[in-house]
Image (cartoon, rainbow, N blue to C red; front, side, top):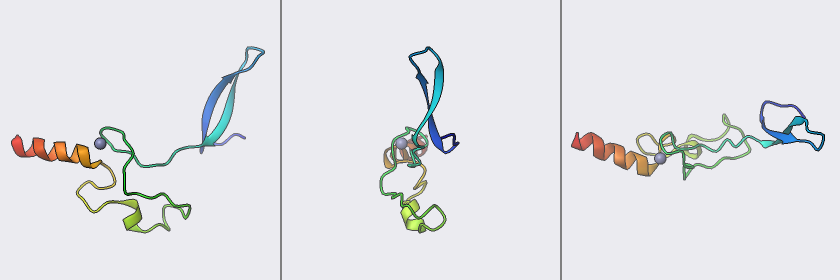
Length: 82
Ligand SMILES: [Zn+2]
């Protein structure tokens, strides 16, 4: 099924033709903006982004919900030392 919300996968068929397979849905898990690791403390529920509460989407910390705690620690250290 063709859909923009599904992940595209290029598969070479036995006839030698490359076809597009639409496999699973795209992973919407939030990741860190610097290192790219998955953000902990954020639960993805099936309710949708609008109906989930703010505490489920973010962490009570500066840059919580966008940068992980390890990257924030290094950023704070760099800003203090500079
Ligand atoms: Zn990070």
